[in-house]
Image: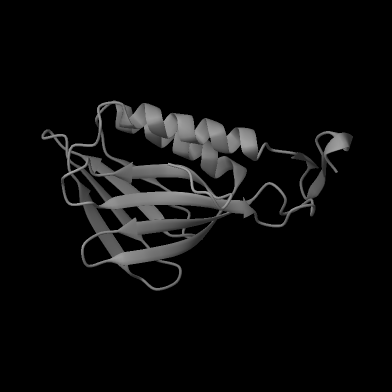
Length: 164
């Protein structure tokens, strides 16, 4: 699930072997502005979609609260319900729609830039797919811990002086 170029996955959903080969990933490329207080905890990412006739990627900058929202979306998905994520309008949004036959439809809508929407059906993801996504989230949080704190509106400082 991880690549060899230092990029790690926050999301990796793929068909089981022997099916269509569709996949949707959110790859974390690194910090958006490392060392700069106001952008250090933002993550530079890309959504990557692979299907028979579509290979697409969408640039995304995640805020710390986006990771919290992803954790909430995962809880909703674990209960078998529809979930959406990144609905602020500043980035491409994602929708996850499970159905009774264990299929999961994932849609990415790039409203802020191209207006394109891509929907990919994933056939029978593994039983533990939501747990696997939680593990990826935990790894991203470990590799990219939140190191900046907003002390008052518009005022920031390093959480630990040793991280500077």
